[in-house]
Figure 1 (cartoon, rainbow, N blue to C red):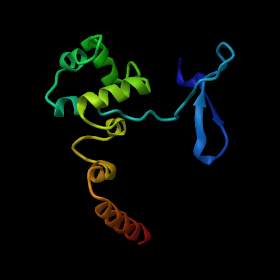
Figure 2: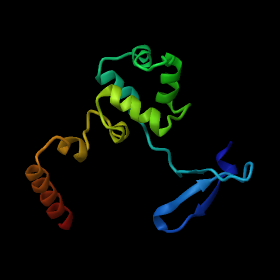
Figure 3: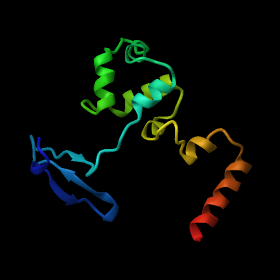
Length: 130
């Protein structure tokens, strides 16, 4: 379906803007206005895995072409598959949206003590005020 066939809608508030396709079978499909990049290839490579090796970790096995389609965005992973892939890579599903070479604050603080997390949050809040 081409971008021209999508219409902009506002669902309920400024933060809920999205796109939907014209009615198909009585259902609307809501999708983001801009695709979020998944860093699946980067995470896979950082773990020293080929597409075939990652696919082989699934039961039943997933073809390397399927992994390739996930990496290029040709095929979308549902949340269950994304959770399974993240588990196989030893990360959280949200980490797939971040380049492993540039860790997010959540990644950096995940295994820290509560005291360290509190201190980091105070620092971030003071920086944001300036």
